[in-house]
Image (cartoon, rainbow, N blue to C red; front, side):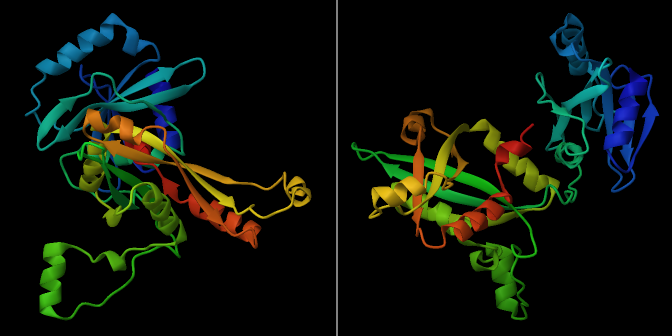
Amino acid sequence: MLQIAAMILYRNIPNITLVQSDDNVYDILCSSTIGELRFGINVVSSSFSTSNTYEHYLKYLDSVDYSDKNYRIPILLMAVNESTETAMIGIQVGWRFGRPIIFKKPTMMSVTQENADKIINSVKMMDNTIRMLSEHGMKIVKTIAVESIQHNGMAHYAKIVYLRDFTEQYKMKQKIVVDEREKFNRLFNGIPEDEYPNDFLDNSILEMVNQKFSGAKLTSSMMLFSSDLRELQQLAHSIIMKAEMFVEPNLTNMSNAVLSMLEGVKFLHFNIDFFVDAPYCKATFENLSLHKIEPMEGWLRTYNEYDEALKTLHSPTEFFI
């Protein structure tokens, strides 16, 4: 099983070295040749997490002296299916604010080339050292603050958070700052909003949200470091609800004959996440369906533009562990 695990890791995770360990905490010490990242891997069978042995292992982890340098590292659980020679992996022990956190039910993901960056970024997030994320993990974070005033005058709050990829067209606006006062203001207040990338998709999402919740405001930030990913991870503790977003061509004032010819017209549909902290606000943001109507003229071009932009849209839940 260790041989299969090593083969899967070497095949899918680039720039790593593996050393077998006789320790009871982990079987393999994995090191990245980039950035001096180290983490342990406990290799188990695919049915291990439902066994009594796993309960004993969790109790053992509670007794470990994490001041020992050998254990001041993230520790992953790797469940190997020997018959298919595949594996799932998740964070078993991570670190926050210098303290170990034992995850009783790790979120597991397949060990594949497609998930390689996500696995490494998750390890970086759970390491004590602040590290630069891989290209896969670097995103623009868009947050829309939403408020809904109820009939009794009470305000219900939520926030929409979604991620966008950096691209050649979607990137930070370069600005040379020479004035010392402006340098201080940027240091104190952060990067001005108008220097972040913003396109028609961002504008459309905000417009659709404002149709339902007027006064919604959008702010931007960057996710570049493991500390930024840790901050994003805090959203996992919120109540998460998905809103359906529809972008459709304007079909009003068209004859039935024309409409019958347009049965093959494609509509755009995607989801965004609402994050709610207070349970009593949940009903306000449930089962939302938000719409935007675009001109029928040039709809095919509009559809293709949205379709391309949506490929750069991501949910924060993709990065939760």
